[in-house]
Amino acid sequence: MKDKMLQELDPLELRCLSLAARGRTREDITRETDISHDRIDEAFASAMRKLQAGNVAEAVFRAARMKLIS
Picture 1 (cartoon, rainbow, N blue to C red):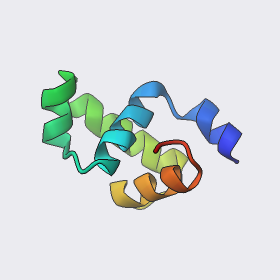
Picture 2: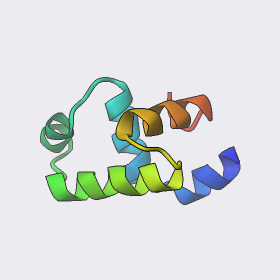
Picture 3: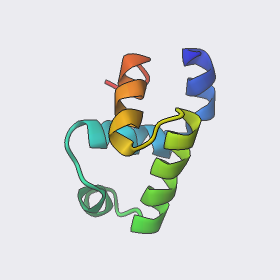
Picture 4: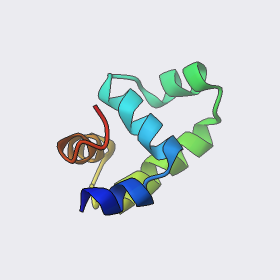
C-alpha cells in the first residue's frame, strides 16, 4: 500500500502533511510556502481522500505510519 500512496500523493500533499506533522497550521503553511490557502485546503482534502482519513490529523498519522512523511 505504501508504494501506491507514494505514487498517488503529490509533492504538495506530502509537503503539507509533513508541515502539519510538525505542528504547522494552514495559515503557517501559507505564510511559509507562499502557496494560497485554497490550494493548501485542496491538498489536505485530496490527501485525506487518498489516505481514507476523516481529518488532517488522521491523514498525518496514516502517512507517518506508512513512512510517507517523517
